Length: 353
Image 1 (cartoon, rainbow, N blue to C red):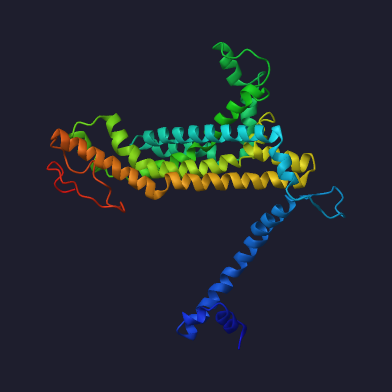
Image 2: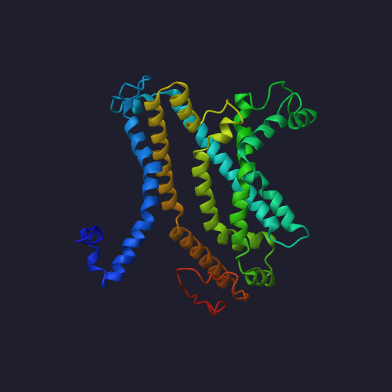
């Protein structure tokens, strides 16, 4: 029996394969995907497992000595250290502030671009520049424009009476964190802009036309049509941006050394203080916190939850119009055709829903 046949028999796949041709096709698929699996295992899985091992050890500076097993000592040391909790608080503020700011800015720009105007393609390309420009370049440019000696922003703020210090905004702990949040939001809002613009352009125009016939103004259209349709995309943007901002290192470290986030704390602990076991514990706690956040976020704002909220929103609208006896144009409070839930309104003013 060949090696391939033994592999098929050992995995129990032979009971699902009816012919030798199917077996050869499966073996070909395994052979094609095996290099990627080995690469992922060597580059991602093995470092993760080794990092978990290091987090329970004390790593000596001498490379000839083996790490010493200390159990949970690293974790207990971190959880009882004020510096760790300060870094966690700073990371939470930075993540929340930059995520909200970039999402709101991306939504505003997407609404602006959701219409035809001259030079739209050029303007769209310019909007994407902050996100595609290398981080090292934009960080040094921001350091230059924020300099109190020759920077444009401090001079402008000084003329308005909002800034009078000779110290850079990035050198003061009280102003460094808000500045980094603004920088991160400016750099990352094009990501939210692209996703939200794509979803905006997928909303049927007939829904807005029907709403206008019913007398709904721009604010009502945004509240009752645009925002409910964007809810799923906004949830995806917030989730992804929260994960990336929680892990952000380069944009914080290159801009200022006055903001201590958990990634910066892990870097300083492992490579500046040479406490690699403690640094590994910080990175593992970072992973656990993110995993808990993702699980909670999906449970609160998952796809089913979003569709149920949208369904309830449409039902409330239908009940309101039916209670008022309003003869309204069909469609603008109607569920999208892709909705996984189906319902019918028994009111006379929505005969086909």
